[in-house]
Image (tube, rainbow, N blue to C red; front, side, top):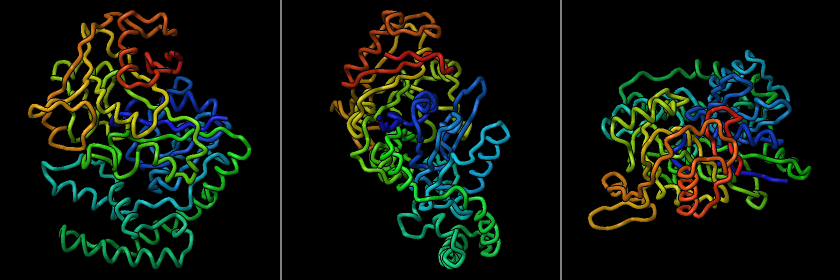
Length: 424
């Protein structure tokens, strides 16, 4: 029996979808525990490309059960569209997808407020996907949220919506100078989703407890990455949920005593989407090369990702706060043609060296990376399937990452296909 949390150990987009897909084969339940449809996992399955935003990618494996936990915020329209896409492509969710009745709903006003807040921030914008995720989590913390269980009880839903909408309309009119939203329109639209949710929702904590007692294997699928975690990331340029291992506990209702391993996923370099500090960001010429070869465009937004050298400072931070026991290194092949490869081992700012992550945004934005330089391998690794067969300099690079992070590299990805994977 093995219950595994899979974590992004950088700023997200590390290639978790491929590793989740591989680990899902040996799992019985796959659980998504935080975020919303602002995240995306791209998976190539049976020579087909799938982009999933809310439903765990384990749904592509027949017979596997998937759970959307209480820590996820759910846009009913986006979820129904995703289910329709899967059905159209021959993937059934019947009896396989379970949603926590305690998950919070993304409402129309969340999306509007998300967009307006980003607009007024100007240069200080966060780079949100404008899908209402942040405002929905804000309402959850302010006890103004509406959960799926509330929607299922018409009296509760009507009362909650009246209460919350009165506040949101005041904000829309008095602060953003926008029109008020119609109570009746939202009420009717969301009430129609009751029949959609009814066969899917349950107490997912009880479901996962029963799975544990039957010795089923559970894989917890994180969205985004540790450096986007609302507590441990590069605040305020973060998401609004806990993308670290702790989020798997609060976002699913499973005891930490039942977790066996936490695996971190990193790229062989570093990327991030949106605004915020990025100490190791490439110059334009190298940026274009890596972005093109690595197909570095966001799964959810299509925005080009910012790319840079591997940052061991932020990766060490991820090892620390997540308790990582293993690492999966993705996209090693993207570095094939480079004559030399750098690793950031510290930051220098105003005469001080920072070997460990600092939450000081000024240091992160203006500090200078301290690099180690390593020779490249200048040949393709895409067809290699054994660690021993990798070029000498590629093995040295991976071993150096292990030393810097004090964590074993157990998976190396050398291409986008499932077969292009080395298990160390």
